[in-house]
Amino acid sequence: MRSRPFQQVDVFTATAFLGNPLAVVLDGTGLSDAQMQAFARWTQLSETTFVLPPTPEGAAGGADYRVRIFTPGMELPFAGHPTLGTAHAWLKAGGQARHPGKLVQECGVGLVTLRLGDGRWAFAAPPLRRRDPASTVMADVLAALGLHPAEVVAAQDLNNGPQWLGLLLGDVASVMALAPDHAALRRLGVKVGVAAVASSAAPSDISDLEVRAFAAAVGIPEDPVTGSLNASLAQWLIADGHMPCRYRARQGAALDRAGQVFLSQDTTGQVWVGGDVVACIQGQVTL
Image 1 (cartoon, rainbow, N blue to C red):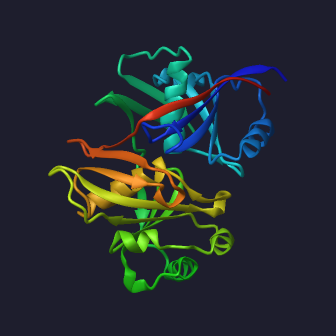
Image 2 (cartoon, rainbow, N blue to C red; image 1 turned 90 degrees about the horizontal axis):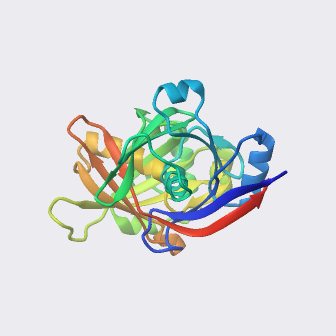
């Protein structure tokens, strides 16, 4: 065991303690999978990341660093708030990007590009695979959420590394009123993202989306603000005409958080997921 540089940051917020916290071990070299998982379990945060040098293949593809992402119960191939939070911590710790205004992160899904724009970093959403959910799964999930099928405007199985069952409801009040049976969702092994278009007035080029994320399947009853889910929701909802090519998602109100996720689709069809990051703790951890 040795002392390693460590940061804890708050992601998808410009105000500390209102977003989604992330633990970042800035030197994960020499740690075993079991050691990483044990520390992630100990932090009890939704995700903990470990920064490593790129693999030879990653370096050849332009990676600035490699990251491994752990929940308290498992490793993830990709996750959004750890991507933004790790990039912020790596830069704050003195990391030097190969190209100004651009970062390339190597992780389980491969290489993920981040770019700087409008004063905040955004990551390129990984390719999405989606399909209609199985009727039996839908019935079980709706029962666990206490929803009637008529309340669901649209539904999709979403997979951009992490897999989510995405549900679009008719109004924000229905989303905020949900009180899921988390034990049932854990038994089902399904992570569920629920969203609704906000009815409040917004700037002419932005429509807001209210989002909640239930992830008891990986040990997190409700995630405060979720980058991977918002990425896949944007890819689905923009493609199917439910949302415009630029909007802001709100998440975390049910947990007394105020997460803000900035979604946009460029002219090539690539969806970008951005958010602010605030540093909260900086020091050393013995691992």
